[in-house]
Amino acid sequence: MNTLNYKSYTAKIEFDPEDNILFGNIIGIRDTVGFHGESVAELKEAFFEAVDFYLESCKKSGREPNKPFSGKFMVRVDSSLHGKIAATAAHAGKSLNKWVSDTLSQVVRSH
Image 1 (cartoon, one colour):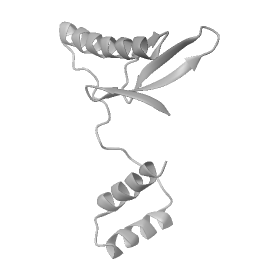
Image 2 (cartoon, one colour):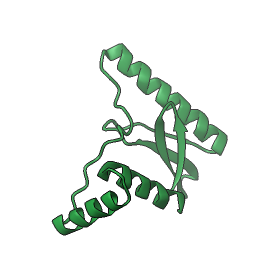
Image 3 (spheres, helix red, strand yellow):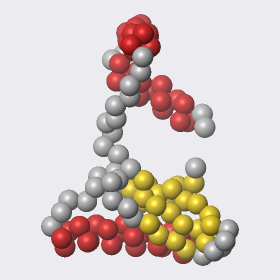
Image 4 (cartoon, rainbow, N blue to C red):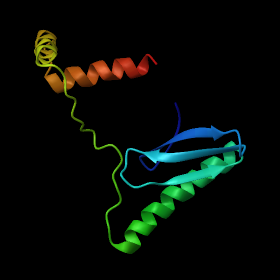
């Protein structure tokens, strides 16, 4: 996946062949914030402007902007898998959270 990052916000980037533009949307927040550009330079500038505009709009309206990725998420798995994961984490001398975090980091780095 192609992404851009700015001020802790991440945007997923795509290409629209019909309009011949690059476009993106901030991911990981409830609000919808999109932008586009005809070149990579225009796209980056539009992304930076979109984030800054979003933050300023929230400030002016007196509301907290959505925070990107809190670092917490719930995953539901079968109870037998849960037990196996907990046992594997214990065998590795790690908490369940630490083991899952380390394992996910390894998977992300390998892609």
